Length: 214
Image (tube, rainbow, N blue to C red):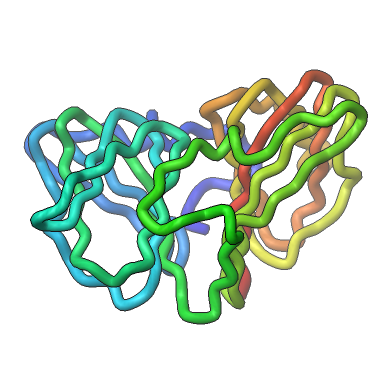
């Protein structure tokens, strides 16, 4: 991933919209962060394969010409799989992530085409447990959400690719290469491929994980 690893970051503060402009930056293959200033737009385009739009800040309007648009709020997701031309309008400054999927992608059946959903609402807290849900996976990436009850965690391990954690609710402690970092809702943390890391929830904590595979 083209993001500094091993530190707590905020994609929102690092991608401030510029008046009158649209800005995009590639995070990893098929994963791009967009920053749109109020009143700008991304023209409707045809994507032959499905796309996930992940809101980060502001309100983005996802639209298909001739059909009602849908509002994408922070930490909400829209899955677009119908192949229709799709664009984005910014009624206010907004930031979102676009994840391009491929024909090998396995989607969780709970995710429906063009339905907006909040990531943190997909998984419940359960006493004394960690609840995990895979949203999308293919040979290049895996996207999931997890809910940790207080006192739960993942022991130190290494991932087969770079991975980004999105804190969705509460706070968690990220261990990475011998150091600990407090991660709060709205913040992100990136692990390098094979970097030793752990997750500990001293309080209840929900997160999304985007793993890129080579």
